[in-house]
Length: 464
Image (cartoon, rainbow, N blue to C red; front, side, top):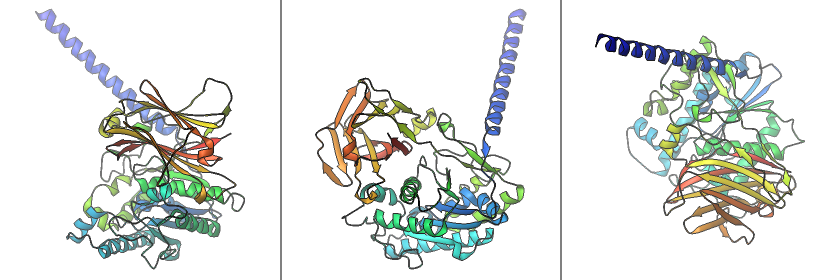
């Protein structure tokens, strides 16, 4: 019996020792991986730095360190918010301590948030004239980029019930809520400011306004090729479910790439912050009182030892002539916890260009049924045609089959095909349907009962 007890104790000791060795190894691996991340280029007095964000407070939590460093280097700096953040109902109720859904109250919240950003940016050393607001609909810009172009009624905001920029101090007061308005404002700012570096929100961000701003910027830069020098782009990630952890102010911690993006082909870069810069960032975040009351710990989570940036490379599709398709695979989310929480249900996503057709292959972890469906968004861009006139295609698959829309209009496409291959869906889409583009902005969304469930990152497909 004594020998048996001794054997059990030894086994437990060895297991504990092995556990600590594994943990140390993981920690060391994490440190090594982080150490391998490149730093963003240093700023200098010739830089013209454009900070482009969707909502008041994104500029502080995402790039307050960048702002401080650029000012210290003598660079010119401009901050542009595409919305006034007037759709945050929870923050409004907590901050104002009253429940109301009158149109004027949402506009009032947009004014509150605009003033908070101005105060925070002034604290960091910016001038009023270098802070600009566009005033487009909070939580509405993704609808605009995918549907509201050309001869269409402007997007009408569900809560404010207005369809044009309501703020007189904005860049284009009374501009209709259509894609042309947002694109025109961005192109005017880019032509006037001629940035050398642009910091913008990320195409994998879970917030739809963050993703759409990245798309609008890409189109604006393509339109201005040859008119301005191509600036360096640094997408900043803010909204990812459960990231970063732990919540709250932890200046001793780093902001590291989310685990769910560990296999993504993103070239991550960082800006290391000094203790003084972290302290100033934290202080700037205190100016956003309307947001901090609703979520006291959240904004301060981003005041850490570094800021994080990175982008996906374009996916180059070579035109194939062989019968068998060679697929260009993309990396979908790998984090099991995330998949379980949001049920992305996509195991594979790949693209190919064969002859006159684009092919999209989607591997699913569950079958299409009466509740579960899949949507593909394909926005074509051509160097020879206005983006407003290009098709904005949405292919939706549910139990009744394949349905295709161009913006808001249902269309019939004879040569479009949907092929079931086990749990994989293969779409054949005539490239002419997309306007024979040079680039395609592409995203896959899963749906439950026609409500969005989760999205893949928006990716740029470069056609041969």
